[in-house]
Length: 453
Ligand code: HEC
Ligand code: HEC
Ligand code: HEC
Ligand code: HEC
Ligand code: HEC
Ligand code: HEC
Ligand code: HEC
Ligand code: HEC
Ligand code: HEC
Image (cartoon, rainbow, N blue to C red):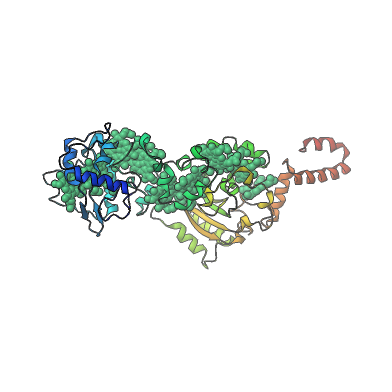
């Protein structure tokens, strides 16, 4: 069944649950003389008008063949409707266009189920303006506008004829279940993660992504902001052992250290330098694909030279300021992003990254945000991190020893010498100061006073 909660109540519907079938059968039998189907005394009883509609629409088998050959069920479960939050407004609340005098005599042309849902979704706006506005600002809605047949519409997550209030919703309607329909792999990974395992305390998808205003996950620092909104001590707790904490937390996505066994990649993101905002492609102007294919003529992946030409191209006639690349170390798949484990399993060893040929730096891609915010990717060759041509463009991102840019490694050592608590730094600073001491005893005390201890 395509819709989530809407029971496909045609006789042929293969996955109809037994209970629903039972309700319908009972209804079909009782419809003859009964006025309201209030099995439960607190159910709202249906109005005369609604019952008139249900006279035909609660009958089993009523369906319509659409222009594309799909069969659209026209059966509404009266009991489910009577119990729903929408019973108070009646059928009229959403189907006010229907005139019983002509209805069913002038069949309406409907292209497909999807087209129908898309058109009917407009009625939600009458009463849920705020929610509709949030939805319209989401990646799902952007996908719908760009023609996706798969991104969810209101009716994919809510059955308008059986919407229960939050209090009455059974556990099976919990959020991850709704999202799971389309994001199965992620939902499974999440359920087993440190956030998904904690029973009643378990997080829901919306705690990080929202429900209606969902944004592309890898855009900017959105997700990090969500993490830190709950884990407020993140910067101070990491600073205890991780030097240059802010810089690390900016250049490494949280799951890249917190998802055990994950594989990582370097994502070089195009940024508008002046605005410090991720560059994004305008609707209908596919410049990223065009330009990267042009720069990477052999298709072997962008190397330093190609990357340099690409940036030149992006900066050509760009009055707003320079386009730059900002590196981020992240996990390779959406599933990995949700496998967060306990803190004891997190990556702490510096040489996971700061080592020649570190595995974390063996996959590199260049990305730009697409019109819906999701990344457009092009592979880069490994050499891009090492190449002298790209030093300028990827200068904000390197890791000691993992690249061959010796100049940068020297700068890094100097940075370490300047006051970072690290055994290596201690050692080199000690050596330096010992030599210094030998040369200039007078300066000795002042020098060690500045050293970290
Ligand atoms: C006499 C039986 C009958 C009654 C009463 C009736 N309908 Fe229908 N309805 C039909 C039939 C038959 C169709 C399919 C017509 C077609 O092929 O397009 C239909 C189609 C529909 C459709 C889908 C196509 C469209 O026109 O949008 C909706 C929605 C609908 N009815 C709602 C209602 C509502 C709301 C009421 C009460 C105000 C109502 N119906 C009363 C028989 C009925
Ligand atoms: C809260 C708004 C709302 C109310 C109230 C409502 N409907 Fe609907 N109805 C919809 C939407 C939205 C769809 C399309 C669902 C989809 O996308 O599959 C729909 C679909 C239908 C259809 C199937 C044909 C079609 O166009 O998809 C029928 C028949 C129908 N409604 C009849 C009724 C009847 C009868 C009532 C009253 C008992 C009623 N509706 C009350 C919003 C509503
Ligand atoms: C005629 C007004 C009206 C229309 C149109 C309408 N609704 Fe509602 N809806 C209500 C009312 C009233 C409530 C109950 C009060 C509330 O929660 O705002 C409600 C509640 C809801 C809830 C919340 C249930 C809960 O408490 O968690 C959902 C979900 C919902 N509507 C979905 C939809 C969808 C989807 C559409 C479009 C197909 C739609 N509604 C169209 C009036 C409407
Ligand atoms: C991807 C699934 C999904 C889509 C698409 C979706 N909703 Fe929801 N909606 C939910 C869930 C789940 C809840 C339950 C509350 C929660 O957990 O945030 C909800 C809650 C609501 C509520 C209750 C109040 C609130 O905002 O929490 C309303 C009203 C509502 N939705 C209307 C709509 C309308 C109208 C649309 C289409 C514009 C829509 N929803 C699209 C999943 C969805
Ligand atoms: C603890 C916060 C958190 C929760 C809860 C969470 N996510 Fe995510 N989600 C993330 C992060 C972090 C990313 C990766 C962002 C990035 O690339 O930096 C992500 C990425 C995604 C993506 C994009 C994957 C891709 O291919 O890039 C989807 C889809 C997604 N999440 C769906 C879900 C669903 C469905 C749930 C509920 C089952 C969920 N998320 C729960 C944090 C969360
Ligand atoms: C009817 C199917 C459907 C449902 C239900 C659905 N999604 Fe999606 N979602 C999609 C599709 C299709 C995409 C675009 C392809 C992709 O990235 O997987 C998408 C994209 C996303 C993205 C952006 C991916 C990125 O690359 O950044 C996030 C985040 C997301 N969904 C979260 C959720 C959450 C949270 C829920 C539940 C509230 C949910 N989705 C429910 C179909 C769905
Ligand atoms: C360089 C790897 C690395 C990065 C990046 C990283 N963490 Fe951690 N994190 C760790 C390690 C290792 C621990 C365990 C420290 C300990 O127990 O001594 C930890 C501990 C934690 C804890 C447990 C409680 C605490 O504060 O000690 C939380 C929560 C946490 N991190 C959240 C985050 C968030 C949120 C982000 C992204 C903003 C993040 N981490 C980025 C490695 C990292
Ligand atoms: C809605 C609040 C919330 C958000 C958002 C959130 N977390 Fe958590 N997180 C928790 C709770 C609650 C726990 C379990 C209790 C605890 O141990 O602190 C937890 C546990 C953790 C742990 C295990 C800590 C330990 O002591 O072993 C890590 C690591 C972690 N979260 C990282 C993240 C990351 C990374 C993000 C963003 C992608 C994130 N969290 C987003 C609430 C949140
Ligand atoms: C998960 C990978 C990872 C781990 C683990 C890691 N780093 Fe880094 N580190 C990076 C990356 C990536 C950068 C580059 C940041 C930038 O310049 O954008 C960096 C940069 C640095 C810098 C230079 C900052 C600057 O001024 O540019 C120092 C110093 C450093 N790391 C020390 C350490 C130490 C000490 C540890 C262990 C306690 C450690 N790092 C653990 C990835 C890591």
